[in-house]
Amino acid sequence: MRIGVVAPSTPIDRAVAERAAALAGEAGAEVHFHPQCFASYRHFAGEDAVRADAFVEVANDPAFDALWFARGGYGSCRIAEDVLARLGPAARAKAYLGYSDAGFLLAGLYKAGFGSVAHGPMPQDMIREGGDAAVRRALSWLVDRSPQALEPHVRADARHAAFNITVFSQLLGTPLEPDLAGHVLMLEEVSEYSYRTDRAMFHITSNPSVRRVAGIRLGRCSLVPENDPDFGESEEQIVRHWCERAGIAWLGAADIGHDSRNRVVPFG
Amino acid sequence: MRIGVVAPSTPIDRAVAERAAALAGEAGAEVHFHPQCFASYRHFAGEDAVRADAFVEVANDPAFDALWFARGGYGSCRIAEDVLARLGPAARAKAYLGYSDAGFLLAGLYKAGFGSVAHGPMPQDMIREGGDAAVRRALSWLVDRSPQALEPHVRADARHAAFNITVFSQLLGTPLEPDLAGHVLMLEEVSEYSYRTDRAMFHITSNPSVRRVAGIRLGRCSLVPENDPDFGESEEQIVRHWCERAGIAWLGAADIGHDSRNRVVPFG
Image (cartoon, rainbow over all chains, first blue to last red; front, side):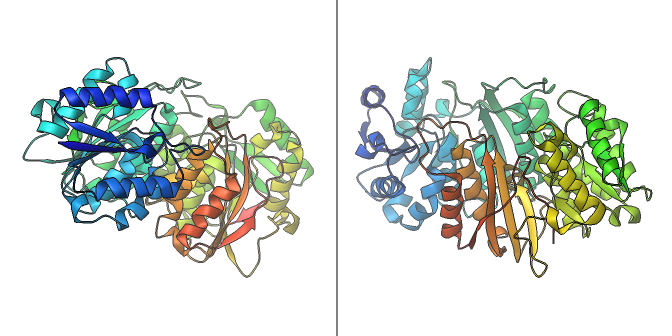
């Protein structure tokens, strides 16, 4: 089992990469961090072309069984369309795992019919409290497709997708937006004011394409900055409010989020 | 000339309202601040129903020649669809002026075929340095349709629209999105990190409906928080980058923004 890691958004520290690689060894996988993961150009892990080339190189290399996103941040939307246009047959045979900003690329891959695209922990999660467990969980999905790694509401007879709320909002209507009709849509958020989550949920649930989902589940919304004045509604209340207004089924909580408990949600 | 003021987002102070009303008197207008402007409920100037009712009351009242948005903030997207469904003939005969969060309602009004919808200063702009000039400019448009109030690139033989970048992003694909094919689209931003503006411009320029605009002009992007690391591109560079990628004509600067120099852009 060989896993290639690339960083379409922001760079990862070598020490963090080495710790994740050690855990991969224990899990029976060989992890290769593409040198691009450590590149730095302004906000990004290298210029757009550098990040796109690294992604395409690993995705198209049949020696890798999986492409693992190093971390989130910001930057994958800038390379997504370029990357997707250059992927060949070996890329389609691969698993893809990441979350947060990686959602732009996960969306585009799923839209393009890639069969093994999943929302779940990344090497950078090593730095979280309890991060070892998150990385081991990701590896157990990548190596063994362990059912224990899965978000507990994932069912074999249903279709699913999972996204960060802001990222999902920002890909609606773009060429990256997949058809999620009939899917259980799981959402999560981090470091966003409640009024922004409210506004993003207006945007998401008012898009006719989203109204065709089977329903919405909400993962954890963490590190919410204090609203002044108090917004007066929890993130769950916000999402339920917009689901009700849009006629979208509210399905309850999802065990995903920007934390070490984040479980894996395979798309489809 | 009678102008009714409502606050579909957040409340305004009475002292600010009184100063704006005094300037209106000098301009030959009578301004009525609906009591809802001073209401307070959590984040908002009253509950959703209170704000919606006030907007509908003023819009449908033939005694008012114009509806002036008190200020921005957040909240108009929560009431826009309810409001638009309840507007009658007197509402269509009225002028509407505001910007920032008011953009959700301006968009919906313009989409519904209202003939006099404009992006420009609001009473709350009184609190800015030089705010008197902004409010006088707004009044000169409301009372006299003064050409001096207009954004200098507004031409009689072209169509225009103006929005805050984040607000415009968050209404794409919703029932509020107007058809801006052939329009000069003017954008502005305030208090957003450069990476967020970059992401929003990806979203905006990747939507096929937006690619039909005649071109984009950029107003001022003010109070940009410091990016760590430095984003390395100005807001103009960001917008030009995405225009170029999307095949949208870059038309240059626009004299709009969250400041006292903000000029008026009538839609259409």
